[in-house]
Image (cartoon, rainbow, N blue to C red; front, side, top):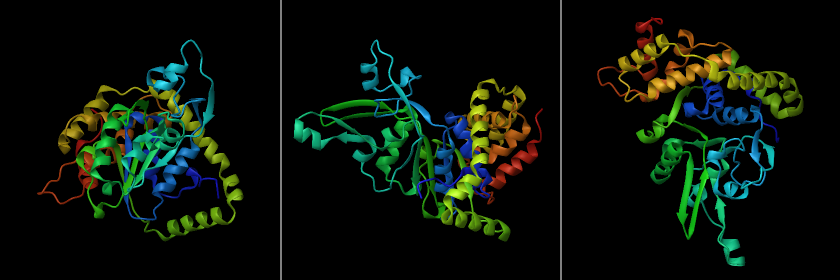
Length: 342
């Protein structure tokens, strides 16, 4: 079955779907951290979103998928080829790259192509997973079990947006801008704070308790596996409609305003919750703006801020030994106490 399960056909998991849509509209929000039980559709949702997104324009001969409109972010190879010449372009699907836990550093960052070096004596760089994920999604299952040296590497690349490799006589610099999506079970280990801070949003998903919902999930999955073409045809129009909404939201994003009352509300909420730094307010503002653009409204309001406050802030809270309530409950309580926009 080559086609991906339609994003529109996913039952439930509303917070996860909304988080993925928001980062698709505005990647500057940061990555999405998904904590939940196995078999709840985490990877299905990520791949379904990538398949839903319109293909991206890339430089035809580029191994890194450079954006022809973003010359400042081109790789060294594209800069060298494009002197006085307009590069040829093509459309390519948005990549979703898996980073397995056992991956070596060479496989992640790239390395010397030994076969070509031995056969021709020429040193050629073989791009790694970070290059393949450029302008797409880098998905890490069980991200909380990732080895420390890979965590440090991802933190550096996520902060700079580029991968720098200097080894074995090679010196390569290429763009590596991707939406980092990590999933895992919190019972199997905690995420290092430095990497945790790189995720803009954090969502919690659980196996649904409602019988009707469970039945509908199983029914749709069974239909997809037994009659994939008919199932995909039935969901083609909802997928196209959602794709149009994403494109419209991307275009409208720059025109969505965030009034001072919304900024003050976000700052007050983060202050009450004791979040470190200002990343909480910034992410809250960006995500609310993306949600407003998706809804087709031109100004961020109280409803947008409330809806995404838990996903934006739950992974930024310090543990309070005097308060045994979970992060989500603490945020909901603070939101209720804060009330509407002043």
